[in-house]
Image (cartoon, rainbow, N blue to C red; front, side, top):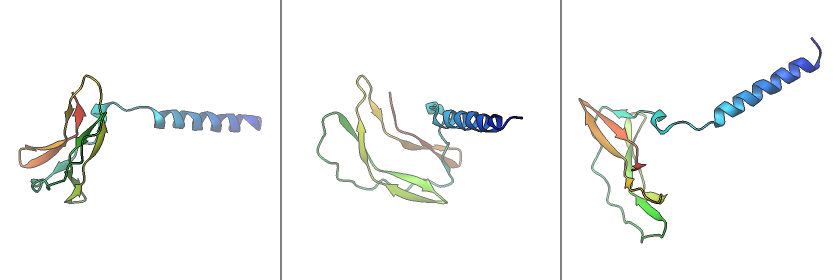
Length: 104
C-alpha cells in the first residue's frame, strides 16, 4: 500500500463523520423525557414587553437527574403563518412525559 492511501482513507473517514454529525435530524427524533412524578406548579414569571417578530415562550420545569429544575422563559422568533404551542407535561399512566414546544 502506498503512503498516500492511508492518508486518503483517513481523510475520507473524517469527511464522512463530519457530514453525518452535521446532518439535520427530524423533529420526531427528539429524546423522550419521562418523569416518575408530576412537575411542581409553574412559577410566576414577569413577562417582558412584547417584541416585534418574537413570541414569549414561558418558563418550565425540566426533569434533570432525578429532580425538577426551573428553566426561565425566553423569546422564540415568529414563524409566519404558524402559532407557537408551548411545551408541556402530560400524564401517561403513572409517569409524566414532556412534549416539546413547537410551531403548528
